[in-house]
Length: 419
Ligand SMILES: NC(=O)c1ccc[n+]([C@@H]2O[C@H](COP(=O)([O-])OP(=O)(O)OC[C@H]3O[C@@H](n4cnc5c(N)ncnc54)[C@H](O)[C@@H]3O)[C@@H](O)[C@H]2O)c1
Image 1 (cartoon, rainbow, N blue to C red):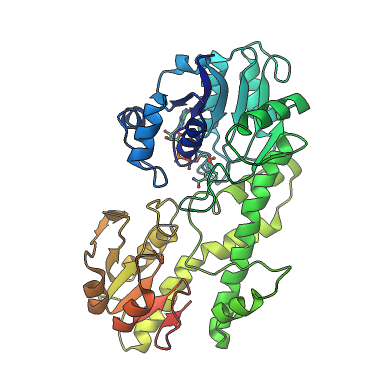
Image 2 (spheres, rainbow, N blue to C red):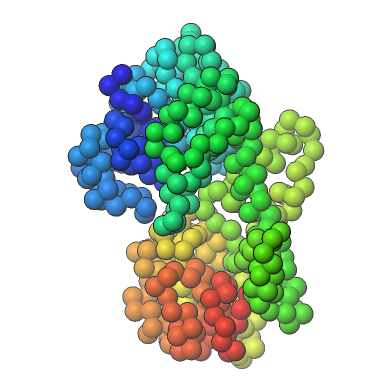
C-alpha cells in the first residue's frame, strides 16, 4: 500500500489526527469532499484553530497530501472516518456524511484494509450502518477486512491533551479487528484502551459527553435558585471542589455549545427511544434545563437594567466573547447566538467584542463589532461576559463598566452581577 492511512473528513477532528500520524512518520493521505479545504491544505493553509499554517506546511513537507479524488482511498492500508454527525431537522441522528464517506471507502475497499469510524454516533452504527455498506463490496468484515470504532476525544484549544497523549478507546467487530485497530493507533497514540466490541466503544463516548451534559445542567439549575436565595454558587463549587474524592467540579454558564455536548447525548436518547420505546430521562431533562439558559441570561440582563432604572429597549448592550468555547473561533451551537436573538427581540442596541470572530450575523442582523474592548466596555449600559477568553482581564473590565454581568464566574468584585 502506498499510504499507511487515509483520513476521511479533514475538520476539527480529522486534521489534528492526520498531523499526529504524519508526525509519527506514517504516510498520510487526507480525503475531503470540500475542494476548497483540499486545495488550501495542499498549499499549506489550515482552517482549524488547533492546527497552524506552519503545522500544515510541515505535514506537506513530510509527505501529507489532501485529495478529493475517491479513487485515492484504495492506496491506503487504513481508512479513518472523521466526518460530521449533526442532528436532523427532527432532532434525530443525521448520518448522511457517515454514509457518504463509508460508501466511498466501500467502492475502494481492498482485502486486508482496516476501516475505523471515529465520528460520534449511537450504539450499533458501526455494525448496523457501516458494516452493511462496506460489505456491498463483496468483502466480509472480520474476514476480508478489519472494522472498528474508535471515538474521537479531541478537546479543541486544550494545550495539555492532544491526539498523542489522550488515551484512545478502540472496539473492533471481532477481537482480531480490535487488535488491528489497536496496533494502528499504537503507532502514534501513547495509550490504547480496548473494549469488548464496537457498541461498547460507541457507548463509552456517549457516556463521557452525557456525563458532562447532565452535570452542567445540574449546576445550571442550581445557579437559578441560588441566585434567588442569595447564595454564591461559584463559592459553593469552590468549597465542594476541595473534597479530594467523589466530586468533580462543573460550572454554570449561559448555555451549552459546540457540537458535542448539545448534540451527542441526543444520539443516545433518540436511539433508546427508537429501539426500546422509552425515554432516557436524564438526557432529556438535561437538554431541557441547558436550553433554558440563554433565555435566563436575557431575563437577568433585563432585570439588571431595570434595577438601574433603564429599559433594555434602546440600551447599549455589549457581549464579550461569542464563541462556544474559550480561546477558539468555533461558533457552532454557541449559546451567544440564542442570547443575542433574545436581546435583539427585546430592542437592545447590541454590539459584540471577540478577538476570534471578525464578523457576527444573527438572523439578518450584522451585529456591530467593537474594536477596542476598554472603550466599548466604558460606553455600554450593560456588559455581558459570555465567553471569558484569556485575553480579557475580567476584573479590570468589570471595574470600568456601568453594569457588568459575569456569566462565567470570572470576577469576584462586589459590584458585579454574577450568574
Ligand atoms: N470538534 C470536536 O471537538 C469533536 C470532538 C469529539 C468528537 N467529534 C466528532 O467528530 C466528528 C467530526 O467532527 P468535526 O468537528 O471534525 O467536523 P468538521 O465539520 O470540523 O469537519 C468535517 C469534515 O468532513 C468533511 N466531510 C463531510 N462529508 C464528507 C464525506 N462524505 N467524505 C469526506 N469528507 C466529508 C467536511 O467537508 C469537513 O471538512 C463528528 O462526529 C463529531 O461529533 C468532534
